[in-house]
Amino acid sequence: MNTTQPASPRAWGVAGLLATLAGLAVGHLVAAFAAPRAAPLSALSDTVIAVVPLEVSHWFIDLVGTLDKPLLVLGLAVAVAVAGYSIGRLWRTRPWPARAAVLAFALIGAAAAVTRPGLGAGAAVPSLLAGAVALAGLQWWASRFSERSETGRRGFLAAVGGVAAAAVAASWWAGRVGPAAVEADRDALTLPEPDVPAVEPGPVAEFEQGGLSTYLTPNGDFYRIDTAITVPRVDVDTWTLRVHGMVDRERTYTMDDLLGRELIERDITLCCVSNQVGGDLVGNARWLGVSLADLLAESGVDPGADQLVSRSTDGWTAGSPTDLVFDGRDAMIAIGMNGSPLPVDHGWPARLVIPGLYGYVSATKWLTELELTTFDAYDAYWITRGWSTPRPIKTQSRIDTPRSKADSGTVVVAGVAWAQHRGISAVELRVDDGEWLPCRLSDVATTDTWRQWLVEWDAEPGDHTLTVRATDGDGNPQTSEVQGVIPDGATGLHSVEVTVG
Ligand SMILES: Nc1nc2c(c(=O)[nH]1)N[C@H]1C(S)=C(S)[C@@H](COP(=O)(O)O)O[C@H]1N2
Ligand SMILES: [Mo]
Image 1 (spheres, rainbow, N blue to C red):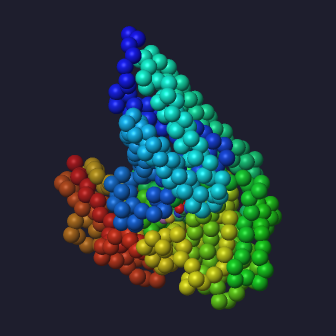
Image 2 (cartoon, rainbow, N blue to C red; image 1 turned 135 degrees about the vertical axis):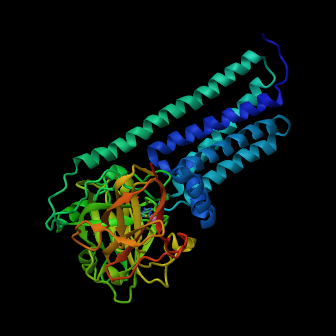
Image 3 (cartoon, protein in one colour; image 1 turned 90 degrees about the vertical axis):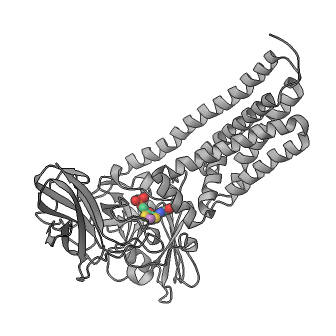
């Protein structure tokens, strides 16, 4: 059929939608080559994460878990698409307000991008370009196709849809090239042997028990927590670590500088303040790196600087107590994790690890700056969003196995317990309302790692509640008082309901 009639509101809407998608795709493509974080949807998502109140983000994370980031990006994509559809319909009767709306959206995207830490004025380009493409697409539709035949409209559909599809395909390709270059750098880096190897934990470092967390958490299984929608891709050849602030002399280190220093290897358990009782935002790794205290000492730290602010390439910050860095613990700038260069998700090429502190106040990934300052003078990223200034990690224990079912008879109950830098001195298990049973503990070399525990239980058929509690190295038992993760970490005892058949 080849009739001529004015396009329906729906056809206008679809034209708006297509023009918007083409714009987004082109914006994404341009960003993919220069600065992936400046892509319109990435910049908008980053901004939402930065401004949304803690209660809202926690409610959302509780609801959807680690799907939070994909769902946020998808949600924003749908919102922008709906806006594009509505703008298309609006253009039909009121072209000027519709043009203004496209411009407004482009400016919002541009503002979101340029205000992201670590991005400059150039970050506005992808969003502005996206707006220009959407505007041009709709203008083209309005002038050529809205009054023409259906076949003409199909031509529009093919052209604009084609641009969108081509840009999506090209950015998919660009999205593979960038990470591949970083992975090639990682592969090319041969980590030197440590000058001071980790102390082996002892003969019983590991209980061989199915379902129980291994002593060292493999990199691929290690929990990942950060605010990055697009993981920073750091060029190690130009990367530097700058020490500044309240110091006698500023210093800057390259990767070669770090590799040329004394390298220490340490087993350290990292955990997240957002970990729920019984949760899995905790892992233990063998880190390779340089002593943070030694490196900072070269700059001459002002004794009045009670806070060490570490900053990542994407502007995220953590503030750690300087006295803890210098109290003899193995605070380090890590470049290796379980025998390989730091994985990109875990901070390539360098990150901070400070035993005894939660990740949000110590474990900066994609590290690029160390600034000596005071707690009075500066609040780091999560402190401005309702989390407490640094406090010690809370003693926690977790039942890994069994989690729900067991056969009657002898059942091995096992898990891990942690209280970094105080250590774990005892773990006990209670079945239903019975006595607390002492558990066997694995050997550990330091107080900075978690400790496996294990006990044999003579299980009778029926439903049972298992509860675990640990005592730290100072002799303080884990509290049974229930507290949520905000503001300084959850407390309470981990329990599991087990059906014995
Ligand atoms: N650059 C950067 N570093 C960061 C974060 C972040 O959001 N950005 N999150 C911190 C938090 S809250 C935790 S718990 C640890 C998690 O480290 P992982 O992802 O290697 O397990 O990283 C810390 N380092
Ligand atoms: Mo965290």
